[in-house]
Amino acid sequence: MPDHRPDRVPLWRHLAMFRRDILSTQPAKLYRARMAEFRLPFLRSFMVNEPDLVRLVLQERPQDFPKSSRVAEGLRLLLGNSVFLTNGATWARQRRMIDPAFEGGRLSETFPAMWAAAQATAARLAPGPLDAEAAMSHAAADVIFRTLFSVPIEDATAAAVYREFRAHQAAQPLMNLGALLPLPRWMPRLHSRRARTTARRIRALITQMTVARAQAIAEGTAPDDLATKIMTTTDPETGARFDTAEMVDQVAIFFLAGHETSASALAWALYLLATHADVQDALAAEAAALDPWLERGDVPDFGVLSKLPRTRDAFRETLRLYPPVPMLVREAARAERFRDRAVPPGAQVIVSPWHMGRNERIWPDPHDFRPARWQESETRAHARDGYLPFSAGPRVCTGAGFAMAEAVLILATLLRRFRFTPDGQKPVPVAHLTVRSGTGIHLRVAPR
Ligand code: HEM
Image (cartoon, rainbow, N blue to C red; front, side, top):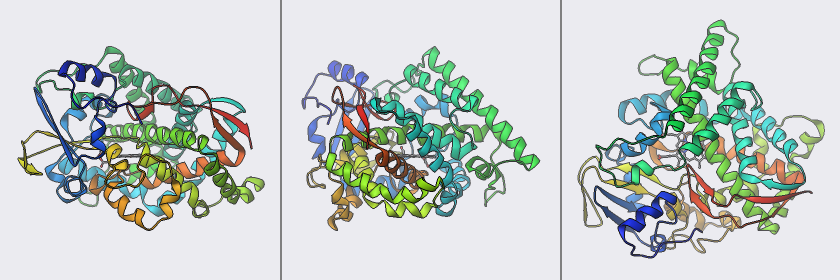
C-alpha cells in the first residue's frame, strides 16, 4: 500500500502531492467510504465506492457518464481519435469493428504468437538481479507486436516504437493529471515539446506499419493476425472499414493499453510471488503441465490454459491489489443525485478499481495476497461488487481475455524455469500511466 495523506490538508499541499502521485494523495478512509466529494476551485469530483453507484455509472446508464474530456486532452496527442477516448456513436462504431478480433475463437488463434513471446521472455532471463518492470514491459510489448503485426519486438520498426514510447512516458509521466488538476477548463493543457515530438514519432512509425499492412491486404499477402482482422472487418451497420488514419489511432491504443497494463500487472505478480514462496512453489508445480510441449519444442493449443487454474487465480489476485488502471474518470452529462448529494453537470465521477479492490466493506483481509480466495464460493459475490481491473459494462476492456491468457502463459513459463526472490528496496506503488513502483521492482532470479 502507498502512504496516505492525513484526512485534512491545505489546498497547496494537496496540489503539490498531486503532482507527485494520485494514490498517496488519497486519504486511507477511502477504503471504507461509500462516496467522497472533492471540491476544488474549478472542479467538483465525486469518487463513488458503493457497488450500486458504480453499477449505475458503468453499466446501467453509461451514456450519461461519458469519458471525461479532461482525461482525453492529456492522451489525445498520442491516441488521436481512438476507441479509448471517443464517446457516443463514434465509439459504438469503433467497438463494432474491433470487438470481433478479440472474441474467444479468434483469441485462440493468437495463442502461438503469445507462446513464442513467452518463450523469448524466458530465454532473455538470466540468473542474477532482475528489473522486473523493464523485463515485463519488454515481454508485453513483444506480445502485442507478435499478435497484432506478426513481428517480434526485435523488428526495427517495432523496436523504434517501443523506444519512443518509453521516451514519451518519461516526457509525460502522469496519467489523468489533466483530468484531476483543478485548472479551469479554458486553460490550454501544455504538453512538453518532448512529449509532442515523441508522440509524433510514434504515430509516424505506426502509420508506416499500417500503410504497409493495407498494401499487403490489397495484394493478398497479409498474415492472418489481429491487424489484418481489424482492418478487414466491415461495420455491420455501415459496411465501412477503418481508413488508415483511424486505424493508426486504434493501433496506438492497442499498443498503449495492451502493453503498459499487462507489463505493470506482470511485474507486480512476480513481486507478490517472490514474497510468497509457498504460492510460487505451487504455481511452479502446476506449470509442469507445459512440459510435454516444452520438451517437444511444440506449441500447445489455447486449451492448455485450463490446466493452470492456480496461476490464473494468482494473476486475478494481483489485479485486485494492483489494478494497472487505478481510476476510471467519467463526467456527469446531466445533473444527478448521488447519496442525497447534488452532482452538477460537468462534475468528474471517479470509479476507483484501486479502492474497490481493497474495499474493507467488501473484501475480507482486503490488503492480503491470498490467491486461494478465488476458490471460495463467497468470492463470486465480492468480485461482483468490488472487482474492476478491466472496468465493467459496455466500455469494459476489449483485451481482458487476451490479457488473462497472455499473463497466465508468461507466468507459468517463467515459474517453470526460474525461482524469484525479492531484492533491494521494497516497491512503493505510484500511479503513473499505470500503477508502477516508485522504487522499481527489483528481484533476484535463480534457476529452479
Ligand atoms: C492486465 C491488462 C489490462 C488491464 C488491467 C486493462 C484495463 C483496462 C481498463 C480498466 C479499461 C477501461 C478504462 C476506462 O474506461 O477508463 C480498459 C480499456 C481498454 N483496453 Fe484494456 N486492459 C488490459 C489489457 C489490454 C489489452 C491486452 C488490450 C488490447 C490488446 C486492451 C485494450 C483496451 C481498449 C481498446 C480499451 C478501450 C475500451 C473502450 O473504451 O471501449 N487492454 N482496459
